Amino acid sequence: MTLLRQKLIDEIQLRGFSVHTQRAYVRIVAALAAHYKRSPDRIEDPDIKSYLLHLLRERKLAPKSLIVHVSGLRFFYRHVLKRSTTTIDEALPRAKAPIHRPVVSSSAGHTGYGTRNI
Image (cartoon, rainbow, N blue to C red; front, side, top):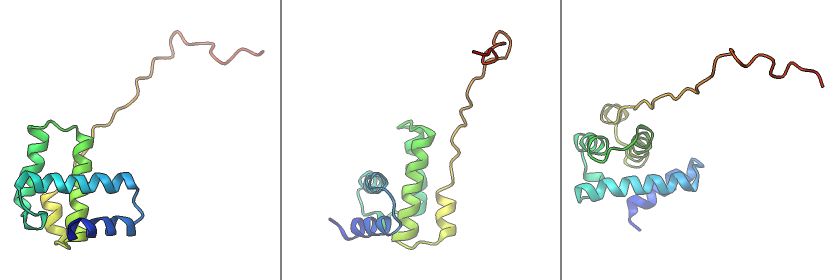
């Protein structure tokens, strides 16, 4: 296990994140490193932004999946590498997930439900 991976796991465990989150964040950082074929500490902010666009446009990640990637990378660069918060927030914007509202049928045709005494 590399030193950076161990540092990432340590920071995640110190904050009490779930094992699922730990695995996801480790996988996300490893995928970024594999994409650029270099250590994640040598990847610059414009590269990170480009990678996120690659995930969105070419890999067609769903908005919620992209949010998980952004969160994992933000955590890694902020808490493990101690990069400037301002720089990270500019490179890793907060994505908005679409809001899915339930479809509610009209009250027409549903009169009388739950109003009859037994």
